[in-house]
Length: 243
Image (tube, rainbow, N blue to C red; front, side, top):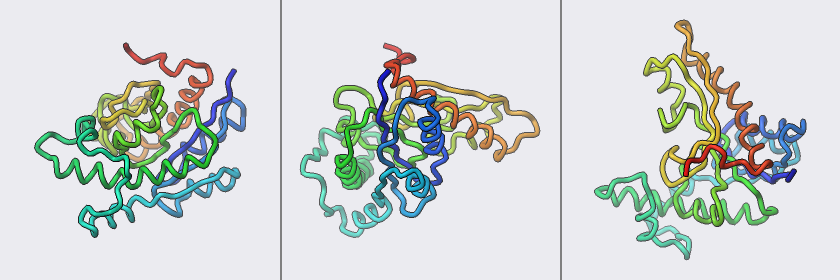
């Protein structure tokens, strides 16, 4: 069975990163984390990478976006950036919000080019796992990674397609759902709209709070993510993809 090479991107504590690392070290996931990248400096996830002797890098999105605003859009945009083509592909903004779409695509492409230059330093990876990475990628980045097939996966704190966005557990709880869960899915041009690879669910009881719901969900995330990455080892990553 093929041993996969995994790149991981994080924004915070890296608990899902730790679950992936633990699974590779135990042998339940036949893989190796070859790099960890973060959009935020000095987060705990970077400490986890260092502890396990995994190389890491930081691309400071906040700083890049601030500089872009200060320059009034005159920051150095990648040479191969094609705004008209990317506008046709993006699914986040309606046609009447072209200024917002332009801002998003240009500022993100600057950051995404830096991520691409960092990961070029490492051995070619099989899958890029977003483990609490709180940034939406633009088509500029996605097309660079998905040259032959979908290779970017994400873990989401809700049972997609319900409750996309950043607050899945809170939205699930506040809506009054009796069941919550988490989803691992491929990343496409939309927000949490890519094909689903796997899901796990839990019961929400009358005495649960948002905090206990999050705790239940995280516990399942740490099981689900390595299980879904294992499908790449087995060549079954498209097992749940509808054609």
